[in-house]
Image (cartoon, rainbow, N blue to C red; front, side, top):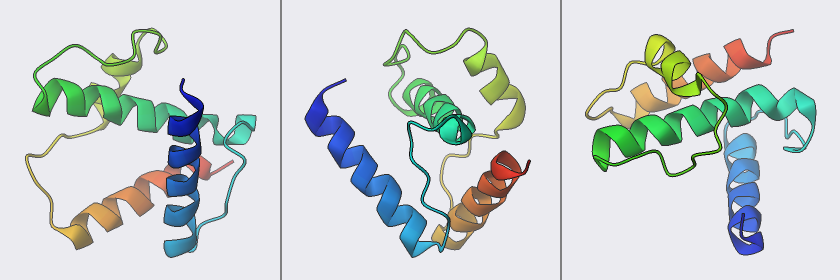
Length: 97
């Protein structure tokens, strides 16, 4: 992955955590792995749904797309409050011990 891209996504992840009053995790820490896996799953679904193309990262774990399809309902659009609530609920599920 390009260093510039990683720096940008790390800053974005931290900004989201601060804005939503979520703990800031070291994204290289194994505790953050479920969050990054969920983010990768959404990337695949969004690419498939909106870009009508192949997943942008062919190195994603086997079965991730199937898991994403089974657990995430892709909607054409979402109001900002609905998107925030959905994100927070999913984040809560992923970070429970």
